[in-house]
Image 1 (spheres, rainbow, N blue to C red):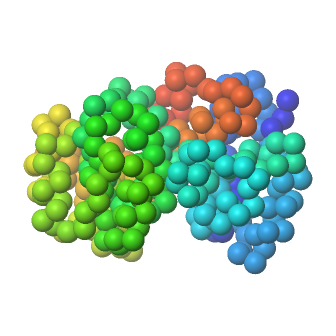
Image 2 (tube, rainbow, N blue to C red):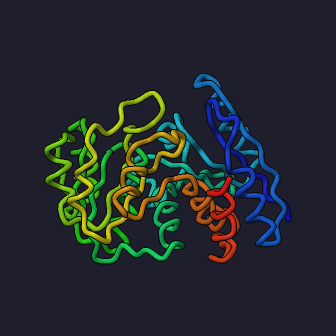
Length: 276
């Protein structure tokens, strides 16, 4: 059987997804016909209607993760909680939206032997990816999450949506020190450290984390980002989001085909992606 899948984007020309879905398809015994749709905003509605007629499912990336919800006939709780969707199932002429970004981060770290049960977390950022991560943290047994972000309205929206485990704070140096203290996990899901944006000015707050803490930086496009290097220099386990997209593909394939790749297959792909 051949699954017709795609990526809906605006200006993506070098994605790990074609390789991801082709690899997982082979693992599951399916052929995958994958196409990238780069479309301008004024072409979005026409393109989505076409995809609804011709595909079995598709992935959505920025800047359309929020807008795509307007075209969905149904939302999974993950998309509803996050206010955005990155994975769309086409079923019986209907579009069903899911959000698998945070799932990909959790799975990536689980494959490396980490658990979030009873962990205390600091999350920097409150935008779309941060919301998806927050939702997954909320259902994976954490005991509390301190959210640090510059925009108060974003922070308040995330905290109110995710519930009492989440507490919002202004992102500044003083609060980084205060809310990194005795945390098990530190996650950067903000634009800090991305190419073209400001980076962390002071990283000694990492000394406040628990001695066996882990640091995860969603960003991986900037090899000179300061957070991962500073964490490693301090002996803290540190990961970047390079394999996150591939891991969200595990959940996406399950949504589209009803079958999930094995952890062994997933670990093989993650190792390949991270070494590239």
